[in-house]
Image (cartoon, rainbow, N blue to C red; front, side, top):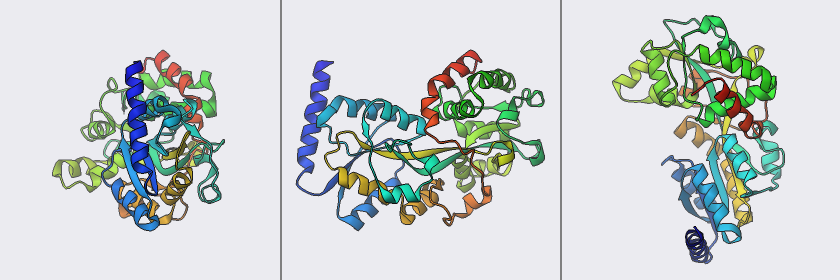
Length: 338
């Protein structure tokens, strides 16, 4: 292990030295979208600052930055889900930073209260339903899916999925751990099958009639709607997306976000890069290229997002998804959510 850590440190030093001859920002990103390269190119074109990109899973990148320590070349960590950003903060690999622009442009519920990270795109975990089996008026909120009438009608991913953990964490923030555990016990009883597959698999299951509803991130359905494959279009035609309104607690909104690395050698460039990702130009790109809702208000949306309609957020600061994550995992385990 010691040799491995030494090798990581040496590689980090070599990387940092090689980048020191020009203005750079070193990005460690857990977003695996080829289209994000156009965002990076736009930043370099606008500022002249070159981007060096390292990709990996969130846990891999957090561990890498931690192992690199004070010699880490990392300037910015980008990842998806507020729970993962909370993990990065808790691991000590991020630092608080100030930006008047970001504080004014991004709603407080989409930012870390202590200034360690900000949300840059919104991901709504909505309820997909079979349009032949369900009428919109039957749907209420996530909480009501634990009621008896939904017995054997729900498909969902496993409890290992961070998106589901964050959903349960948000319910804990609103209702407390004890009530949420009671909800989870009843919710699990309503599963049509054992949790399996990803969000797209849940949508396909709803279209096939294996279940009537599923909880998924909105952009998975958007991809099927935009697909050229006839089988995807057929699935999309058989389902619709529902976002719980405010009267039923509002929609659960998660984020893709970024923070400044704890030992950033290019801190000013790091903040400048994160600010760029919150400009109208970059936000439009998130929406068009990746079907994510912008964090900026009153942005023009592409047709596929307009089809989903407006949504009311649940008003919960997304930082709670991280702080409540241990409790969420306990609740899900005790409820038998596998």
